[in-house]
Length: 101
Image 1 (cartoon, one colour):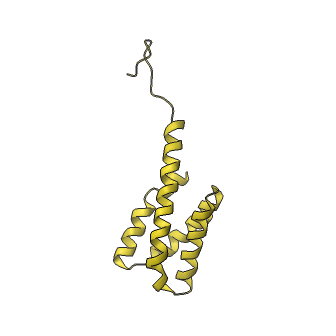
Image 2 (spheres, helix red, strand yellow):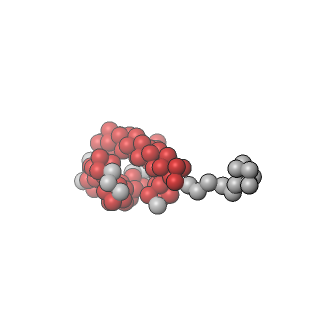
Image 3 (spheres, rainbow, N blue to C red):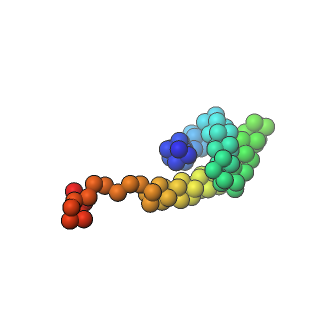
């Protein structure tokens, strides 16, 4: 479910950075902090928490430094989860001879 929930987040974060619209970053980082901790991705949770804290404190000068690291970390976690998901996905229907329809 983490993969489904956050698959669009890296691009949304890139868009927010490009437009200087940090409200979506605060919301995403807040949600991502707990979601990442829940799945055990503690470095990602820490990065998300740092970005959220800076935004809450109004230190937007730190956003261009922290957000790209968060995006890279999130992309990495999502990529790993996608590989796991692909391995666990059920195989398609099989013919009697063993081939796929």
